[in-house]
Image (cartoon, rainbow over all chains, first blue to last red; front, side, top):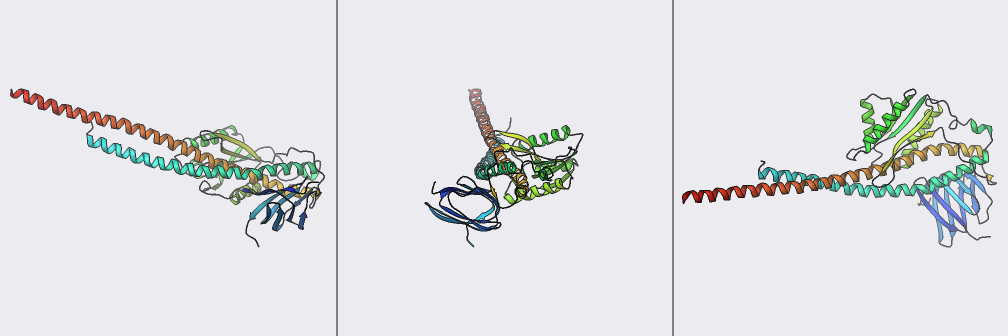
Length: 88
Length: 286
């Protein structure tokens, strides 16, 4: 099993993140989920909060709200309505 | 024969115009670059959205609640809403003219139905307002600046009208940006929402019921379509203006060259005339 997965975060206006990471915390509508490589396929609406991730290239954090997240075959796509780099 | 002073004045005036068109060309080039960047930046989301929707649609295929979703219901097209994107300003060659002609053709083609207009951009609005066409909503200022939220607001208006069955179909008419020198007039139907091509549904864990997810995804389809059209249209507008202004600058250059040649000829003619006068005067004295 790969030890990283591809995380993509995009809003309608631009792409925010596209990189291989080891783990990510994603604010879903029903609370935060933690994603590690090999996660089961999952689909959820996003809530609002802080998305954090860390990988070989370092870690990052984005404030996002609204949208959807899809986890499929070590590929996590976050389609947020809004995102910003400032932290809460 | 015009006097030398008149010609010089004329040349100066053409040169001033040339400077203006050159400046406008440069401004358009800069704006075009930014518009193109935005088109590119919007692509990843649109692509991810399409894939996601196809997979969700597959997961709920066969659910009878799906067919009754208000944005998927298709009715006979009696009342049509045409969303019509033009520029706010002119001096962009045939950009607006082509769009307006296409809109008129569209209205003629649907003469049996009732076509109402939503205009985005001043030029299209002014044209149809003068002709007392039914404009149900108008937006201006988007070619200067617009956010995704602006596109979303337009989309919400369209969706509400559709859900209240005040309209049976929504079409977008805009110039799609192909390249610097060519734009393609595009007419697409955005409502009712096209059924997604379904793919093999993966075995998802659904945090929310799939049908709810799809219901949330559908309005986004309209928003993205409007946003994409706006981006394309703005890029095409700047490209058209840039080409038009480039041509104008070239034409002004040609005109200056022609006038300068003519001016030199006039000057030479007057010098020759003076010499003849002097010579014949001298000869008369002998």
